[in-house]
View: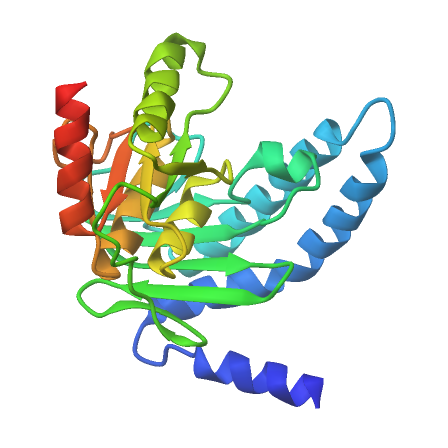
Length: 274
């Protein structure tokens, strides 16, 4: 029965009219088993003196090779950019890939682990897919058509007050040059009775926001690939996304403020006044 349910779920996410989404889904599902096996090994390593950092690096390198081979075979003329890439192409077709959501989370055996793909033409994302290999959750997003999961269409949180809302404020600990900015953002949220949470995984936060379980996102010092995929997911789910100074998100943006349009406006006014 479980097998039939799984097969039914997979059929509901078939994208017969979107070749790129079909490629993404097949790659994502084929990578589920290697991720699950690696996650078990990583959990075993957690209690050792050395930890699981080396094993995590090996796993991500393996997955990068896997996705590179798959994409170059199916779309040899397209560009391919992983999260580590700092520049996104403005012309032609390109694939954007985030292999696990957060290497730090994975190295500590901390879920969620998610694989993200996006297909871009002339600097505009046409479709994207986010897959959680440990739980078999899948989310598909198409330009102008919205964002969907097995349970239906995604919509961002409708809360329009900063007070008592839930915000993710995140900056990687490796970026120490903006520590004051980060702590000031946290202080601003607390001053306005806003609850702060973070997963350490921007794309996962975007999905959580688009499921209505997180009211807003404020992230700085992020990878351009992650910012660009996240803003696409959020906009296709009825939300708004911009940089913290209200500037539109571009291909090289490293920060994001996301919420529904009313709540985003209130955050922008608070940020401008601080």
